[in-house]
Amino acid sequence: MRRKRDALSQHIAENNRESTVFFLTGRTDETLVGSRIGHTEVLVYVETGTGFFIEPDKIVTTIEVLAGAVAVAAIPGERFTKTTAHSTIQLLTEGNDPQVSEETGVHIEGVTAFDAKNNLVLLKIAETGVPLPLGNSDNVQIGEKVWTLGYQDDLRYTGTVGTLQSRYKDGEWWQIKTQFSSGIGGGPLLNREGTVVGVASYGTGSVSGGDAATVATVISSNVLKELLAQSGAVMPLHRFQKHSRVHAYVLEAQASGKAELYDNRGAIKNYNDALKLNPDLVEIYSRRGIAKTRIDDMRGALRDFDKMLQINPEHIFAYNNRASAKAHLEDPHGALEDIHKAIALDPTYVMAYINLGGINLQIGVIKTEAEGFVEAERYLQEAIDAYIQALELDRKNRIARQHLKEAKRLLRLSKILREIEA
Image (cartoon, rainbow, N blue to C red; front, side, top):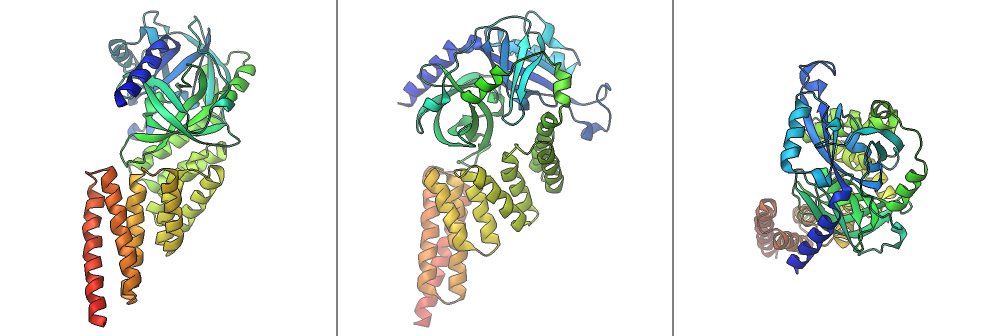
């Protein structure tokens, strides 16, 4: 069955390859070298993204792909190879502009419309391509299979199957379960008929606890239709990038980079600045909440997770992280309620089971110390069951395995103490 799904995904991908576009963007990091953009000593690195033809001379992608880029290369799918990608990366890192090369990239004339609220930008190019048909996103049903097309971080072009889990923000944004890498951002989301029903925006998180996202956010195709209707005069890329609401995406990316390096206070500052410029960057609430937990600002984190869940009531990662904050604030029963909501939304969420085990363990210890041994044993057994479930989903999970041993030890201790008391 897995092979059939993979074969169908590859079939859909290959049928639509010529309509996709591979983006390479050169970027600078002034914080690493302390110099100004344009100086030869500025460190340049390259990021990838995806776009697609939506009209013969227009490409759509996400603002995230282009925001903060000092050089942009767009390679149509029919010209894309790993060799051309690597040569283009070389040109970018040498400070050259590869987008005018007839052999590889297309010339981007500029931006004809953008939607900073919904992370979409429409580009006018100097030649033509094969546009994908645009469908009605309202017709897609919860649980329906959909496919993202794009260029993974390792430069592979792929089609990846996913499932629509939920809609939020008046149905304009979707949450889908899929395997998602950042390079696919900006790529098309297709239904089985090969019609565009959305644009892949960003990875939200991983239910397996790994680095690769397994849940992604998608902007519905009906939002893209509205953007197409607004297409007008061409704006140069550099002017588009200076727009304050576009620059907010740069600040958000900088914040996430700092968070990865555990510069949590720096991340929070950047997140705050990004939200001031663009209040529609709502995923910031979830990400900022995590940064706040790392500096023990649990009440601040709780407010951020509350806000995220007001916007998207099915954000499983916000439920899981809010549970952790509640547990630290000595509200273990509220934490359990949140964890069970996360698991109900996705029964394969490994980290939620680990968190469930930890909260039950916490309550079990409290009950044991209060000599409520019968209740303690019930919670400790539930912790054991949660860790076993996590290991059934991920046999190599060391955290679950270690904590399972501790839960079993505490359960044995509680039974001994109960017998002594008796």
